[in-house]
Amino acid sequence: MTEAPAHAHRGMRSRDAILDTATELMSLHGYAATSISMVSAACGLPASSIYWHFGSKDGVYVAVLERARTSLLSALPPVEVPGADVSQRLDGFLGAVGEAFQRHPDGVKLLIGLGMLQRTASAAAVAELRRYRDGLLAWARDALGFVFDVRDRPEVAEALARFTLRAASGTAVARWFDPAASLDAESLRVALLALAAHRGVPVVTGRG
Amino acid sequence: MTEAPAHAHRGMRSRDAILDTATELMSLHGYAATSISMVSAACGLPASSIYWHFGSKDGVYVAVLERARTSLLSALPPVEVPGADVSQRLDGFLGAVGEAFQRHPDGVKLLIGLGMLQRTASAAAVAELRRYRDGLLAWARDALGFVFDVRDRPEVAEALARFTLRAASGTAVARWFDPAASLDAESLRVALLALAAHRGVPVVTGRG
DNA sequence: GTCTATATCCTGATAGAC
DNA sequence: GTCTATCAGGATATAGAC
Image 1 (cartoon, each protein chain N blue to C red):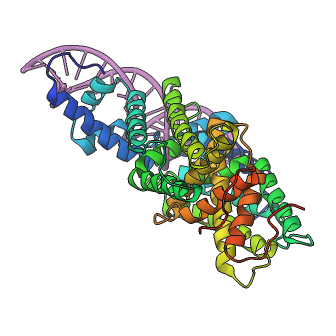
Image 2: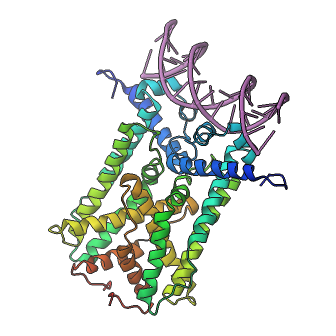
Image 3: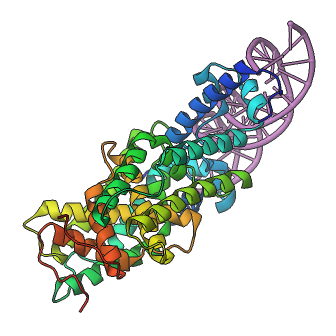
């Protein structure tokens, strides 16, 4: 972001190392409880290097969020979920959500835990946080519109997406108390099918 | 907790004032981002008074959580939800959950936001936090067992309660982005009915 | 780009008069 | 129980040699 134009290999590697440790620590302890000294000690680079790369603690946070967002969103499959019928496509969708949830735990924790920062963080941080949430919601909305074949009824896909995102957020919260908690795709499947049916979308309520 | 046995009216009032302020600030900014100085400035009492009453910042946190827990749990109605059929009882249950959610926003925010404290807070704080969560889960489990008349199938009531708690947690998270977000009792109703039916509980899937 | 050293402020917590 | 005054440490952030 602030590097010289020429070959700055080591600088980039340091930048990534800082982001790695900051992501881990911030998703573990939260933004406020993570100090620059902690990040410095954990990644081996002096605090001044962190400030050189990111300018401020807030800058670190924004960069961490941005990387988590692009990483998670690019890991999500295309919204055109394959499958002959609603049931198959829904399974594909839930599989993608579950896998993303399982493989990017930091991302979700960051999204939730660092939401506690009304006054603490900058406008840039809040904006980045919102962009993160909006990205997830948009993906879920588009994918669910495809799954239930309701691209002509955006309000239905939107409602289903919100429900899915809340279930995922609630599961992330549950993980603080029980680290083994998983997404419970089966319940979510039943709930989404019922919600779609309740809104007049033609679906088969059983599995076979 | 540490007061003298005699008449200590003013002490109790100060204690409550400190707890009020700490609850507000901690549910707004989170535990780590809330300093004793902030609480002191906001409630008007010197920092040393806070330490006299609660011993440490951690003690303040534990007391805040404990009061929020007893306050919220005692505000919940008895689990014997009245109603002739499942649909009526479910509406009563969801009404109680929605009202508690609406009238005790601090409690839910505390429960969630302060969960980010793996190493930051003490064992006592973690225990109190867990007690809070367990209390909510137990109430939801018992009430749902009554609603769906499945007191003989505790695993069903447990699963429905977990689903409800996750939906509520997810909604609290959604509130950080959209303060107007409400519990969406209608969706939760549809989902719970479908989940119960999916587990073999006899329910009418429509409203009437 | 990375290091050492440092400035400034604020934190949690205590001492002791009243 | 409440106040003023204060400590020791850690926080964010910067200066400047290399």
